[in-house]
Length: 257
Image (tube, rainbow, N blue to C red; front, top):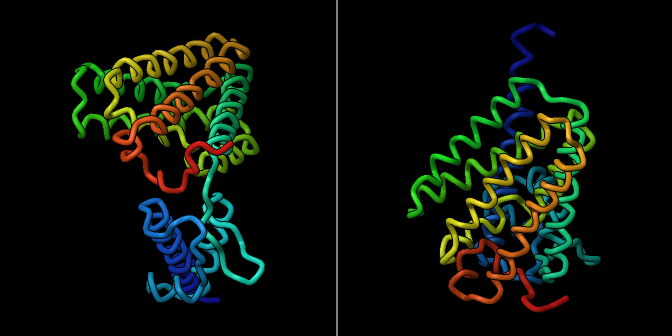
């Protein structure tokens, strides 16, 4: 094969991946925005017509959303939008905390590259800057969410285990289980700033435990850190104003266990 033929193949693969991502993000947005209610049947043909993407990337996107837990396959063909009990959401958050705890323990036991630790410290320093003003504007709160997600992504990479990192990425993709899944509902809470300060202190404590090579402490801190999401879930379910801030709230069967 001539050298100048290679980019054509690469471009084709890249284009297919891009179309799959477009379909995946488009469908996820429709579901989380409430335009596709729980139980709604979704077919390849409907998705092709709605999103203007060909069938092959649509098929891949539907399978990805099934893996994420947003869709269930139907025996008759196609998929149905899922709903979630509060117990399922609690379990997903607990699973995320367990895996993040494992990642932190492995990081402490195995050691972390100085550059990566420097990136983590820089991230928490930026969070400190955001939280310096107790008045959380929409802009500063959005910045906190962005930095919080970065911190958790960086932390996941400290464990030096592709197995753990891959499984953690999968659980973070579960609806409502990501580190920022319930952060936005804090925006209307009267103690919002205090809760974020507590979360930030836990960020710093786990970095300290990792640097001191205290594996058990690092693991316990990250598992406790995930429990903040449990609190935010409970607040969301008992306050309609708060619930309105939650993406995908219509998928929750509020009081089911």
